[in-house]
Image (cartoon, rainbow, N blue to C red):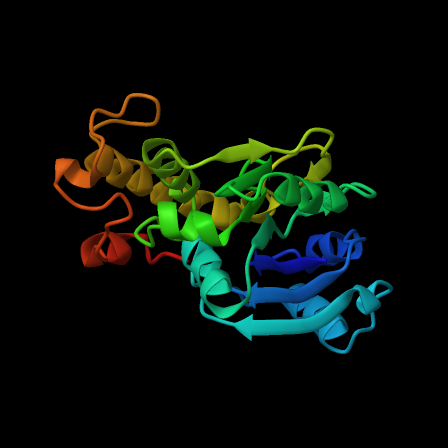
Amino acid sequence: MLKTLGVAVLNRGDLLLRCIASIDHPVEHLFLIDNGNDGGVRHTLEQVRTRKIGNAALFSRITIEKHRNLGCGPSWNRITKESPGPWLICGSDVQFSEKKLALIEARSLEHPDASIICAFGYNAFMLTELGVRKVGMFDENFYPAYFEDVDHFRRVALSGAKAVDVPGFHCVHGEAPLWGSSTVSSDPSLKARNGITFANNRDYYIRKWGGPPAQEKWRRPFNRDVPLDWWVLDAALRKKNSLW
């Protein structure tokens, strides 16, 4: 049984329902965070809350929280803080292929010294208690989304933490014809705002590590003698990115 499966959602309740319906492995705690104001999402969450879904028996406990867009990294942090680990986290637009979730649990049992298990990058990954201790949580200055995963995996590498993949794992991400993130691509206004916040987050990443991804110069945040997981809230950056 998976301890916690966490999903943060902004829009597209239909894809969230597809995601949840594709879960075919027992889960102790299903933790869902609603970060938007989408009627379709509310409808799906009500179905889940009242267990009017075909696989409801797989979930021993269901938690649903409503927030005013915590953002991706902060949502993942909250899931980690408020539920038992290890934590399998996935995007709301991910659809698991049949019997593939069992591969993730098996992989975690095969590698008890793993800090992170990347089934499909950070679209479907398991963070372990050891990983939280060695790598830390997500830098919440990457708001509302993008680069929090790159930053986290850089810290995985610098810390010497063990990361493993999941051979044979498969899932669907997004929908045709624009496969990939459907949160942004489904809404032109979100896509426009994401263009601004994506660039701001990239600039912050460069300030933090001395270069863009794959061209970093520093082995410590901001080239300072601080722990790898050190960060303080950048109020100016958060103000610039508060477009959502």
